[in-house]
Amino acid sequence: MARVALVTGGTRGIGAAIAVMLKGAGYRVAANYGGNDEAANAFEARTGIPVHKFDVGDFAAVKAGVATVEAELGPIEVLVNNAGITHDGMLHKMGEDAWHAVIRTNLDSVFNLTRAVIEGMRARGFGRIVSISSINGQKGQMGQANYSAAKAGVIGFTKAVALENAGKGITANVIAPGYVGTDMVRAVPEEVMKAKILPQIPVGRLAEPDEVARCVLFLVADEAGFVTGSTLTANGGQYMV
Ligand code: CAA
Image 1: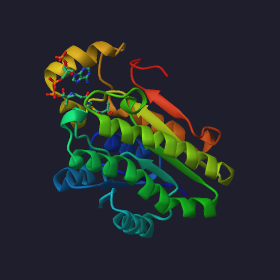
Image 2: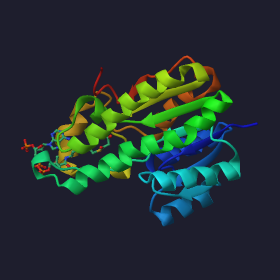
Image 3: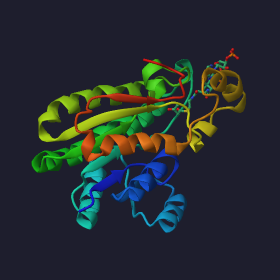
Image 4: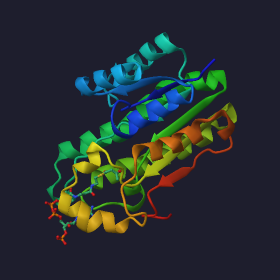
């Protein structure tokens, strides 16, 4: 029986590429989304992947959303924590709202989702958890104290979860993409992109979402059971840890 995968933020950007690639590889995929009904409905119509709307930052909503997916498709064996937002601004200008919104959606969500699936994975003796962090969680980024903190938090969280579940057939890993050609990155002011970001990428371009999805496909494979607690960078050579 094909394994069941849930991708958060799975109807646009990197998440959509991940959901489509997993489906193409034979997984039974559900795609979560938070607010953009139009994009989600178009995605579902285009790909045949069922979409599930719930707020990944809300613990109770996640529990209910996971239960709905599991009722439809069966137990979630592959979790891809991809949903994320930015609220960029220098710390000296950053409001409390921008801090909490980013921590909630980008880090609380990873706890909420992983917590909702981990007991079932432990009971069944199999699980693959991949969380999308960022180059900016590794190196820091001006204008992103909130985002960098959340994305660094994802890495620490994953290492603890990897240790706790290594004996249960469950792996937990991180992918740290660099700048990918999505709506999120297109929100960066054009002059900043041209003058500050692109020149720092040795490969000389933004990544394609599929180039991140390929990394997910590798990490969630049954055969990848010895890879756990790792952070796989996919950043065009921009930052080498
Ligand atoms: N890298 C290097 N320098 C940057 C920079 C960046 N990404 N962003 C801004 N700067 C520089 C500006 O060029 C400027 O430098 P100078 O004073 O030498 O001209 C200085 O920082 C101040 O910038 P602004 O004048 O634009 O100041 P501001 O207060 O109006 O805005 C900002 C600051 C919010 C940081 C804004 O410039 C911005 O949004 N920058 C982009 C930040 C960024 O890279 N976000 C990543 C989004 S993509 C993402 O998050 C996905 C992922 O995981 C990689």
